[in-house]
Image (tube, rainbow, N blue to C red; front, top):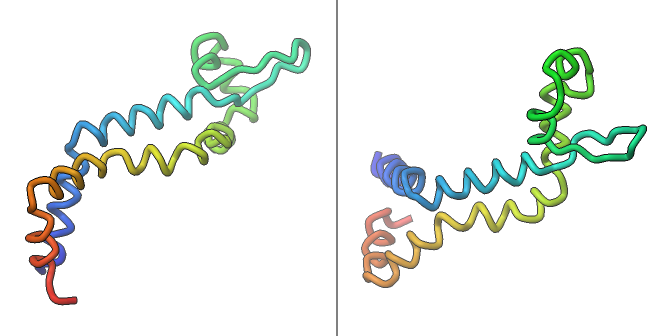
Length: 115
């Protein structure tokens, strides 16, 4: 039961921080700037954001290449996989540095148990 409480408090500390919110926004921006469609006649590349603004809803609903699964897999481009570890680590840096500078990190390690 003690371990569950520690995990719950760490999740609350992480999820309700401003760093976590900024990383979610950065990930959303990174995914919406990925190229998901190339116009064959002009060789112009369209991102997710451009598709939502410029293309007609009827066209997006009728074409199979704009289904949610295909758009999601195309949005996870190479840039996402390159920057995802960095973005995922950002919220924890400020929490870790605050605990280390205050000396509280010794108390958190001792409170989690002997194992």
